[in-house]
Amino acid sequence: MAVGRVMSMALVQNRGTTRRQKRKGAAIDNSKPDKEGVMKLLDWKIVGLSTGTFLSITYVLCVVYDLLFPEYAMYEVWLKLLPGFVWINWWSFLLGLVETFLYGIYTGLVFAPLYNFFNMRLSKVD
Image (tube, rainbow, N blue to C red):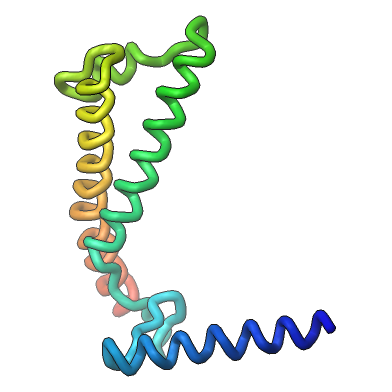
């Protein structure tokens, strides 16, 4: 019974991948090295959106933590890191959320090209 579920889930996943490949063309698997052993290039948009989302979620969790445990609050750090942030009102919360997301975009914009540069340089050395 369990084997049948796993098999059917694998078939559904394979069908979804095939549809995506037909829509977008050939899918690129960045998680595996190519024939020469070189990893594929990182897309700064994907890295930036992932990092921005991660930082935004972390920001929300930290604000909730500060509200629940004010004796251990870290809002002084947010005051220094986020321009215009004031503890706490809705405008300040939304501003901090946008700023943390933009920090993530910036990280992707800087990190992905640096990774790609060193990945290409170092893979040629080996």
